[in-house]
Length: 251
Ligand code: PGA
Image 1: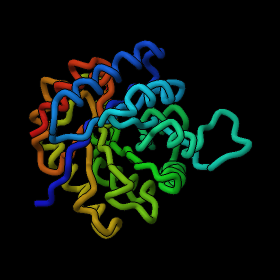
Image 2: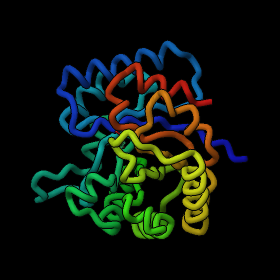
Image 3: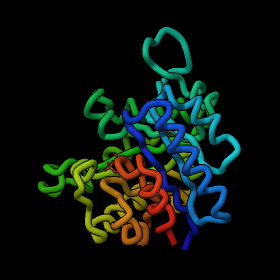
Image 4: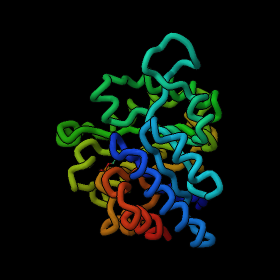
């Protein structure tokens, strides 16, 4: 079996001011430094204004920094947008793209996500491309087809295990306390892996994260599922104890 190092990613969403972000990131960076060798990579994705201060605070630690979105363009007259190179300048290595909240709140289509991933890759960022079905789509038996379509539309040419991570986040499990069952997660992650074959040369090395109400009490079970290579965590990523517990649940 291919060894894929787990990635535990915290999506802070639109939460916290500078002092909160610095506290949380410094706490996690300190735990990572003190822990010695661990079996997971840990990543925090703060809101844009916190990227520079948090990046500076964790610069000498193994804690990685990411953003929650980027523009598909490199610079210029695009009011309110943030270019991928601005993210690397702040110390980011990762960027979350196509989160269901962006797809819903900002009408981001697969082709927009694809263009953003191209721009992110060009800047040297690792794109965490999010996919996932709604509850209605799952109930209608369309989950596999919906996710396959999102993958086909969102993953750009040139994607590889080095520059792309996939996050499977069933929309109905995000922020709801509901999680997909380990059996459903196993089936969907196997389906995603199969979709990546043929699309990405080293598909078996691509990390596939699960997201949607991951918390300390369910993390060990979910992280042990085949083809689950880490977690994208929202609510539980805002508490250092909880987020750390999710990391250390990885075996
Ligand atoms: P949640 O969010 O952990 O709060 O469900 C996950 C996500 O949206 O990435």
